Each structure stands twice: as structure tokens, then as C-alpha cells.
Length: 125
Length: 279
Image (cartoon, rainbow over all chains, first blue to last red; front, side, top):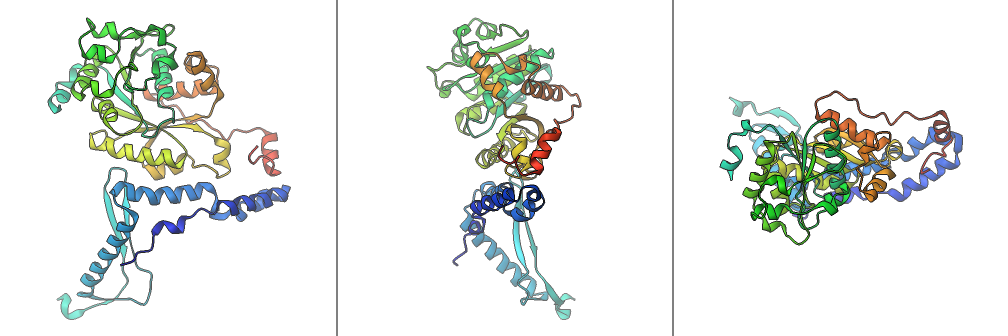
């Protein structure tokens, strides 16, 4: 399975943020009002937080980002198989996901939401 | 080793605190020196141990480099008559002592058991034993945390330091230190206000840790370590005051956190005009 590198989405667009803040400066008095909107979520603080949260997940589990993604896929497929025995999974909505949350003590928690249309009546009895 | 640590802890009055960070250069030694001094100035008896045995600098920051006679390895090898003989007393602050390290040594010259023994001996006669941990998480780190009851993690608000701090928090949990406390060093309120730097709340969210103090960036820290006088002795300085406030929190007093938002009218006007940024 060729997993997409999960951290590729976190390439920091710092240059654009700086450009935008220059625009905000040029606007002077109105700059303050526009600054926040112009910068949006590109602020160095937000980027740093996102990147750290991502990299710490892998550090805490002592697992590389690629392996982590593979693991997530495998667990997800297993879960789909398991739950399909009891109910009909809504595969049309690409809304389901599986996340792994960790704390600094190395405790992990898989969190997943899988949409189910209905429960198989015969099997649930 | 377990037996040595568990050996009737009740008879020790002191508390051993390791000052650690993972990453180098974030201010462990400066924090140790100043926190030790501040606690001693508040009336506690304090002994600092320089556990950074190959690259020790605590003596230099404290201005005690010329008074060092014996070091921690001499003590371990039985070259001193007593622990007291190896300790260096501070010139100006009462009840402040240093157990120095020496450059000619390596941290493999001392075992974890020996370190635990030394700290336990010191706990009988001091209120606080501050252990200045080396950077990294190898033998020097193990040595420093083995005898510690608590830990302070010094970090800066930058990604590399925070990542290493997280690693250290995990390692500390492995040796049974579950509630380390964070000291945020070199904080730049101006940058945090402009969303250029992670702030206190972000650090709490990311590291999931209690914060015991914030130290704003200050020229006075460099000036005072150049002089060999802890910056806490200058109680009028903002940074000295910040250390004293942390010391008070350590001693159990409720001290509110610094309010960095307290700016003058002109600063705010400048910022409003968009001129404050990067100024």
C-alpha cells in the first residue's frame, strides 16, 4: 500500500504569510483590522502547533509517519470488516476516519467514526 | 538500585529536583543557578549538584569557579573526608551550596547507585537539592533523574525544544516522575501577541503539563552570568523578579502569572497603526 506522507500537508507557507503581513502594514491604520483576516491560519504559531502535534504523535509511539499511516489503514480495514458483520456501513460518504491520539506518557487511543446506515436485523439477535 | 531508592524515604527532609530539558542551550544551568539562589534567599537551604560532568558550567554561572577544590567524582572515589568537604559555599547567599563537577571527568566515572547515595545523604541536611542535568537522554540523564523526586523541564517556545521536552516527559514517566513542571524560558510576549510564537496555552495543549513559571527574554541574564552573580540578587530587575516568583510558587505560595499584556498607550497606538510588528 502506498501511503501518502501525512506531513506533506504541513509544509509551512511562511512566505505568503509575510507577504500578507506586509500588505497589512501598508494599509496602516486599517492594517490591524485586516491583518488577522489576511493571515488567517497561516500564522507561524498555528503552523508550529500543527507540525508539533503531528510530529509528537510519531515520537511518542516511536513509529515512523509512513508506518503509522499504514497501521491506520490496516486497522481501519479490519474495523470495516468487523462492523460489516453487524451493520451496513455507509461507504458513499468519505467522512470516516481513524485517528490516533497520544499523551506525553505514551498512552494511546484510537478514535474512529464509521457511519452505519442500518444494523442487520437477523444477525443482531 | 530499587532497594537503594526505596530505603526509608521518610527520614529525608529534603526534596530532590532535577532540572532538565532534553535539548541543549535552553537555559538549564542558568535556571538551576537562579532558582537555587532564589530559594536560598527565601530562607531554604539549597544544594545544587552539577550532574553535567563533562561540560559543567554551574560553578562559572554562580561565580564559584575559583573555589572548587573537590568534585563529585572525588567524593565517589573517597578522596574527601565527608560530603561537606566537597561542597562549595556561595560567597554572598547563605545556605547555598554547590557540589561541583570537573572537566577532567566523564559521567561514566559515577554510577547511578552512587548518585542516589549522594543525593540521599544531601536530603538529610538540605531542603532542596537541585540537579543540573546535561543535555540529551543518555547516561548523564539517567544519572540525574535516578535520585530525583520531582522534575522541572526548561524549554523555549520553539519547535525543536518543545519536541525534546516531550521526549523527556516520556522518559521521566518511565522512571516514575509523573508530574514534571514546565519553566518557559526566553519568552517573547511581543512575538506571542503577534501569533509568531507559541504561547503558554499552546504549550499546555501540546505537552499536557503544568507550568510553574515564565521567564521573559532578558539581557540581564547574560550580564549577570558574565559577572558570575545570579540575576536573582538584583531583585529590582524584571527577570530576577520572575525567578523569585517561581521560587515562591515552589514554596507553596499562590503567585499569579506575569501579565505581559500591560502595555502603555503609545505602544498600543503604534501597534494599532501597524508599526508595532517586528519592532
